[in-house]
Amino acid sequence: MSIIDLRSDTVTKPTPAMRRAMAAAEVGDDVYGEDPTVNRLEAEAAALVGKEAALFVPTGTMGNQIAVLTHTERGDEVILEQDAHIYYYEVGGVALLAGAQVQTIPSVAGRIDPAVLRAAVRPANIHFPTPRLFCFENTHNRAGGTVISPDLTRELCAVAHELGLKVHLDGARIFNAAVALGVDVKELTGPVDSVMFCLSKGLAAPVGSLLAGSREFIDRARKYRKVLGGGMRQAGVLAAAGLVALEEMIDRLALDHEHARQLAVGLAELPGIALDPEQVETNIVLFALTDGRSASSYVEELRRVGVLAVPMGPTQVRMVTHKDVTGADIQEALRRIASLH
Image (tube, rainbow, N blue to C red; front, side, top):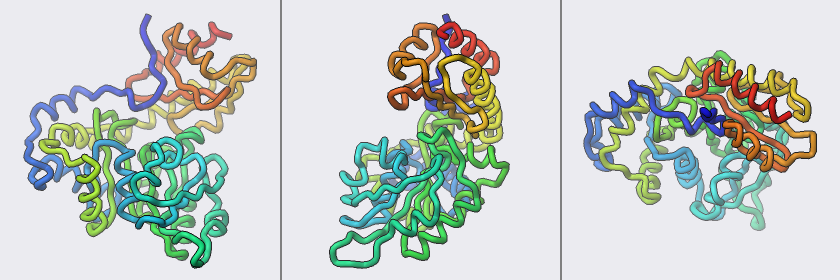
């Protein structure tokens, strides 16, 4: 029986074009700044998101943590949405690495009210940490791939900057957001001070993320990359796949979104599943079990019929579409899932 892997868009395999580019990549020592393929990737990535410079890093988590380190000093406060990846899934890195305090604030479907952000920033006081950085996520993973609009992005950045905060965007899936909204990605990245985006999710490169910002910011970030062990050498072999990802894989994300909606519509018809397909905005489908089964036991049942998913809570399950899942795979997955209901 074939396996239909809907756990994450991180499971994608590199395309034939990526493999060819990797094999033929011109390389040098990137720590010395001498890898021409990495240099080209960083330049193209920076231009794509409207920033002066970019830094190639192994993972999105490293990119986010480097951003926090670069923007803050020890004892500062970082304001994050309560389910943000930086807070929820990065092993306490803000505290462990940057020595910063986190304040979490609520949202609705990953979208923060600017008034909530404003209220969270405390005035200068000898008893308080210095609020230094605000981070938000687009698309928002734990909210189900929801999209933050250009208008809300501008409003949040305006409030943060007025209050003296820098703004970092965890844009792991920022191109999914841009494609879903039908806008140039710069409309979502332009107002922020730094942005991280992943090559290894929907864009299907095997490894890598980019951190982008001002030239001065990236110069400092490069040193933090080194101290965290991210100073790769002949990294052009990896960067070559990233270039293909940026050149060939962005527009096709719309197909992943279409497949996610098809999946959501089919799931919503099954007894024991609570899901509003209208809430599926990109390539992530979250649904709740209402028949008494736990998410962990249900995911194991799915595995036995060749469909892979992940639990996201006691009764919540996540499925993610990507370039290695076809429309036919979605229909077959729905047939197998239906057999469990």
